[in-house]
Image (cartoon, rainbow, N blue to C red):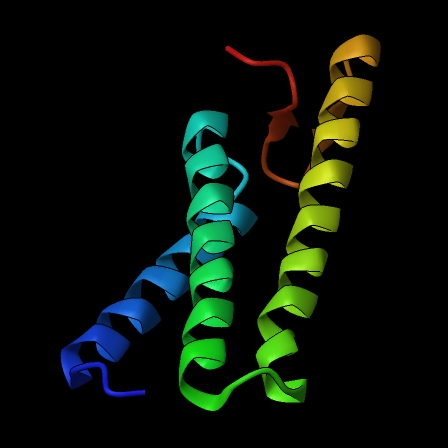
Length: 103
């Protein structure tokens, strides 16, 4: 696409850090919101880049399919948090208790 090599490397690093931030439970919700926003911008700009270079085709739509998965994940995460907060749900592990109640 004509981007410099370091740009692709930076995207890989930030995507890995973002994925880790989404799956680690102790990361604050505000950080996770920014991660979701960053991924959304990334997939939207990937769509625009593919369209500008290759024209409109099947490969151009792949970032939108991934964006749809991301949006679905975000919606269900919000619903799960709302349910947990309404019912004061806590999860127990072998070594400690992980609470869904914000502290």
